[in-house]
Image 1 (cartoon, one colour):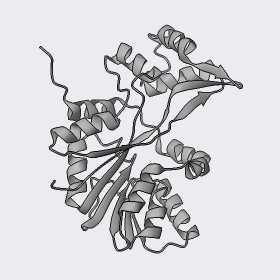
Image 2 (spheres, one colour):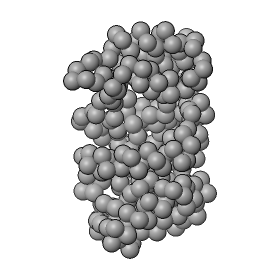
Image 3 (tube, one colour):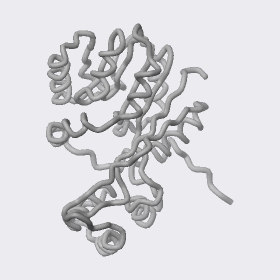
Length: 265
């Protein structure tokens, strides 16, 4: 007899397992890769910008340095950005000043602790991965949204290297919280979300197999000192990575899905 998957429980388990980088490391990564992130097309954000009205107000959960906050603020009446990491919040404020935007309030709080008023829309682009209680996270989005809720979440390929290894090592193809888990969790909560998936994926690359090996162990939440699965990981990488133009290219990469719905429907 097949056992039904507890999607909310699986989300919680993966959040609790994940090795989250220290705050200062996270800030440095954003500084190093922020410009590249800005230059990358974002069809999910473009979709939202076409859907919203000039008089709308928005809450942006976990905005980081403002990749979504700034385009939203340029289009609508006002934005409340909820950013718990002080380093990120300072960079966001600097970017807002550079864009000459005065219609954004930055709250240095977690989403769970934030005190807010009801806005027209609530958006969250990759700001939910550290929240182990997805149901509470989503219910709060609904309480403070008058029109729509939007969540952009990573969507890994089902046949990727990480999916293959995670299934063999952890017994589950999901190595971390993702859009598949979120969609099914929302469904069990009675939320029938719409889905929009990015057409293209930016494949990961590494200069050496050793770099890919380190990346794999980090994603699979394996300590560097744990050598139990090293042989399996190396053999899988050697079999599945493609070498061209001096780099190793993964079948895995960056692709996101947008889940959106109207509260109470």
